[in-house]
Length: 421
Image (cartoon, rainbow, N blue to C red; front, top):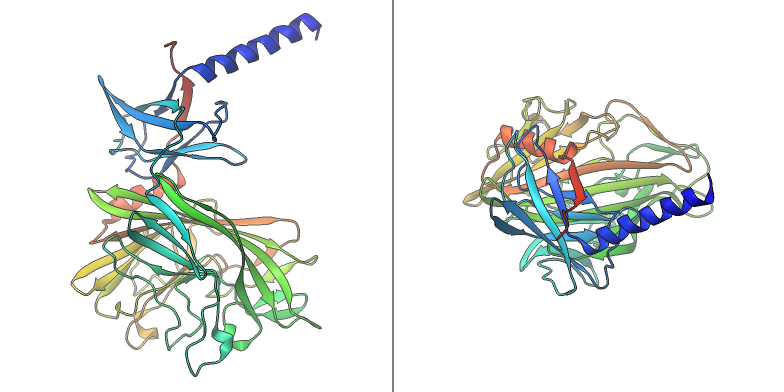
């Protein structure tokens, strides 16, 4: 390639960069194949040379002659993205167009906040708490083995109306901790290690450090590091696996009611030089949920994407699972969504059948090792992605299916430089 051609290419690239830098932009979604609810969407903004320390994104939906403000939030990372929540449903066959500009003012509201204290990270929307993550050791109940003390779990998870949906250390299973995901019967360097049944003293999962927290107008969140610790190793305990939890919470409206959208991503890697085997077992990994003690046999229910209920869901596969129940005078629930990239998707589940617990208490888990074992090789990362739709009242299976599609197959958003201003 001669020097003249190289110079022309460089000039063209510089001109394009300058045009993008001084112009405004359009983000176009659709026409969409299925309805898109007012759920989190994002667009790749790698082509925009913004400076996060001095610029703030401003987004508006173009509706005829009107421009309706839409809240948005930058996420800087390996790939820069802009997150936003459409102000209305984008119907099947339609498209939505947004204007994107950047303001010199950095001032912006941060109603979605991550608040850290000496025990917890709390994600909240204004004054409403969404969930708490315990980075401190939560002590074992009085009179119970101290082995049941634990860190690295979510509790409580609240509904938008403030109903507590999780419980920890129930007297039938002291090792149950709200929302958590240890592995059972793991084979580590020839030893069987149980990170789930911590009362056996073979292993546990513990908090190992806060990597980051995020507050903003669209979502709050945190990234933490956790260690899967092998107590059977000699001469001293050994970290078998490292894990990163990436948790973020959004405040949305579905069918004209508030919901929390909580994205839960687990990134697992082998800390050893030998393969770790996770044999098939009815419990382990994925995302586990021990429901509030107020959900019992006669007032809670389960429905999966395949139409299974609490009577026959255990051991079956599903794209999503809706668990809900009565709390005092109201009803609340969670739709658990499994991502299409997860191992064994549609994922097998562990759902306590009605005949397995005397009072009908509820445990639910997406369990990627339920039917087939998993080998965790050194040097690799293994990612599991879930979304929880936390709501009050009832959620129809039709809307649950739409929400699953919006999560796993989000509409493509196209960013272009707008016409000359």
